[in-house]
Image 1 (cartoon, helix red, strand yellow):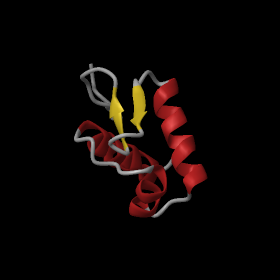
Image 2 (tube, helix red, strand yellow):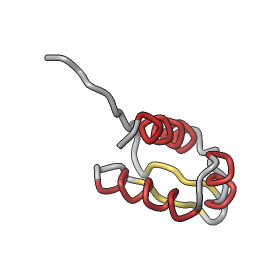
Image 3 (cartoon, one colour):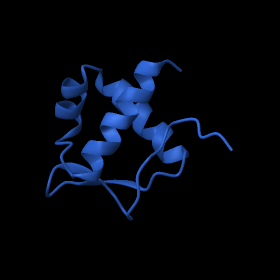
Image 4 (cartoon, helix red, strand yellow):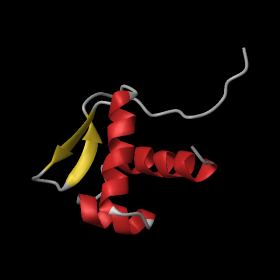
Length: 76
């Protein structure tokens, strides 16, 4: 996984937390990735425990509970 993947996850996480993703195709265009790539990233985030949901009414992704997705090295 490249640094670019981590940056995309960071961007998606931010947009999800502010409920500003828009519909999937709009989010994919905003990130300059394909719809399939977006769904793979969202699946990765969900597999890692992120409680991602989609609101058809508001047309945005959101977290089902408070929190954020951290992707970084933390020394002990």
